[in-house]
Image (cartoon, rainbow, N blue to C red):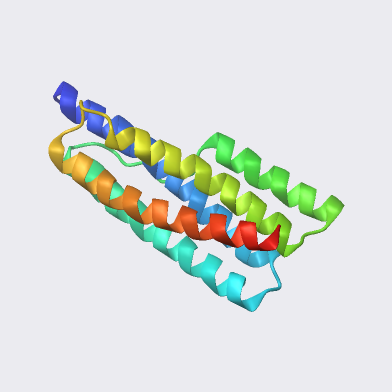
Length: 150
């Protein structure tokens, strides 16, 4: 595999892990809220992030790489922590939105950084840039919700 292809696979796989973290985080948020509007939105976002994961995995395959298929270790630990925290302190819409925004900050920063990676092939940068715009819009919507709740 060429160096640029190896770089593309490495960056894409890292984005896949983070996107799976996000999908699982949204699924957990949907389970944690009683608000039907939030439940629907979070479930839809989880599905949207899983679809993005499939697109990124296909990009990895196009470069001859093996795509990641599991979330990051850090993401798994964070999910367990928030689950435990909710059991101990209870869960409110405010706390759920706070956690979702925290996750959105992470994924937005990671995709933004990847859009600036000049070592990525142009096709990969375009896929990442398109995904980043969608992630940024989702992030901004969650931030607005958080401001409304605080």
